[in-house]
Amino acid sequence: MKKIAFAFLCFVTVAANAQTIFQAQEVDKAATPQGGIPLFQEYIKANLQVPFATRVAGIKGRVFLSGVIEPDGSVSELKVTRGLQPQADQEALRVVGLYRAWQAAVKDSKPVRQAF
Image (cartoon, rainbow, N blue to C red; front, top):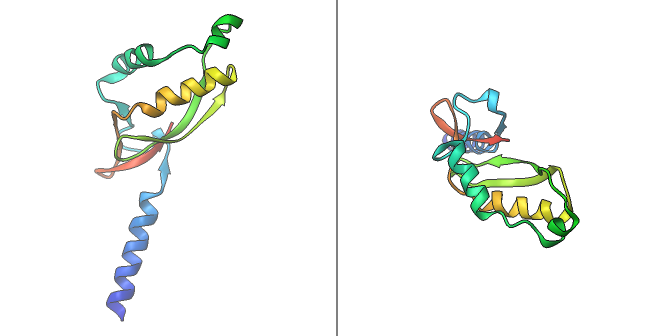
């Protein structure tokens, strides 16, 4: 019975640690796009489609997003922190959400979740 309880406790501890979301300053190596920022910027330029309503209205600016980079290099929990226009916000969420080439953050030699 003690072995089962110990095994369960270890499993719960590992599962809880895997769910922790760290900030960039809390990890040994922060998450970065594979190929670096210049390649990520090229990806954005190539895939971003400015919505018609945004273009017609002459709206220009930036959409600020937040989210979590997962240990497998994907992005989750994306949300707009400072929007521009609803269609532009949705397009920014679409493009960043499709990007799966992140190098995960590392803490204690293990990939972890990191907020951005």
